[in-house]
Length: 344
Image: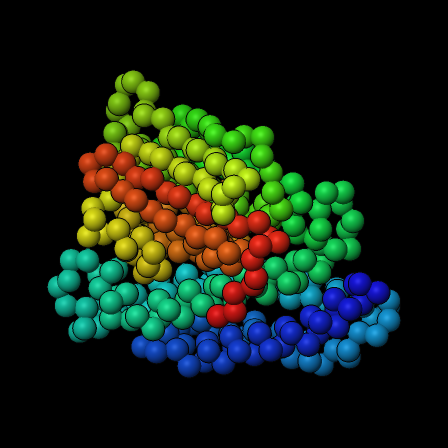
């Protein structure tokens, strides 16, 4: 009966969320709604809305299974939303650069965010809503599996140190493929602690932070450096008396100028030299980014989307940087029993 009740809830809730996003995608400012990739995303939302509303309300074990198969198809259909939205922003930027409004601004990426504040705010809310939709569907699908120690997507004993080690391996592989060298990473702090969380979200966040740190260290110190690179340090703090579980990722990758620090949260900005067109040409549409095939940089989406993941579960990410030395990233996480879903 629990699965049936969950399917009834999804049957009611998902069309509301899908319709709201489809409507927003149709009415975006500055011509963003007219970009081919944005139109494609909207088609996915409209199609999913129609499929759910045309499906009868589940009222039996058999209809619940059929409904679950439907939401699995929807989950897969929307797996490419992040990539396709990023491509839509790239299309808008390309269009803007070709227009007379681009002028001679030497920092076009951030100038775009200043000109398009509504787009930045929309993307924050859109991706927060997307995380919510995927958690709802993913949780319902995972509840059918009955894995010991898990409640759907939630691992009741999520180990930050274990996830950090896995993220280090994935980021090191990406760095090695890109540069042929990898900085060493050490993990310290409360390594034996665990708490209820969605491990996939934490892995995504740590992978992104480590990927950025490794790239910064290698590029700042140079590929020709003969001795070992400065170590990247991860500190995990999880105390009973603390409000949050906190993870700090520290690097000596040269830091970020104070004037540029807020740019790292912009979906229209990237510090990578790699051309975004190269990234889009090298990736296949319709799939989420995977740790093993992610380009090391170029999209400009890594940190903003990671912060959305953190905020969805009641946490946050802060960046503190010392120009000429390095950057510290702080990840704050709340135990899932202590937070409520944010509704954009």
